[in-house]
Length: 243
Ligand SMILES: [Zn+2]
Ligand SMILES: [Zn+2]
Image (cartoon, rainbow, N blue to C red):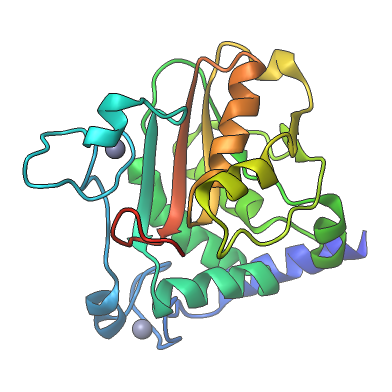
């Protein structure tokens, strides 16, 4: 009950205060936007790149990259609003540790135009393990999924997927190690809610894609017709570079 009241108080505060730039905090004219200085810094990714994975295309490639043509990924469409940098990182961190509804709304504002998909759609956040959920009290991607749901009028189910294992950070692992680490770490709570639907996975920061790929595998096994992914920020680095 206290938590609900606290959330309500924060919402009220968000509405009452003048809108501030999500990047630096200066007062701006438009809600959930950036000031001109921060705007210049943000690298919007939008619809650029491969139509499937969203990564930059080589000069010889048309709409899909060679990798996606050779081996279509489980995630039929991956989109991120912005490139991962100091500014987008600071937003993601403030959302993660501050439960800032205003930040979730700013992210959703720029992510919403990238959500496509056909058929019956369901927004599903990439889940946290329950121990992490308990220590933090909320899943930052779920907050964004709920804001996207509000904006787009698409149903969201923050509990559709759950993480059954706590996984170590994937940073520095080889692609194979990453796949092994996250393999089998997710479960679908209720298959009847997934079967036949286009599931739009929602994430805050997309790095290697191994976690999202494991989520997609689980969703497909549960009968999802199609899986797409929309993320706030994405680490864009040359292909083949290990990070
Ligand atoms: Zn600013
Ligand atoms: Zn591709």
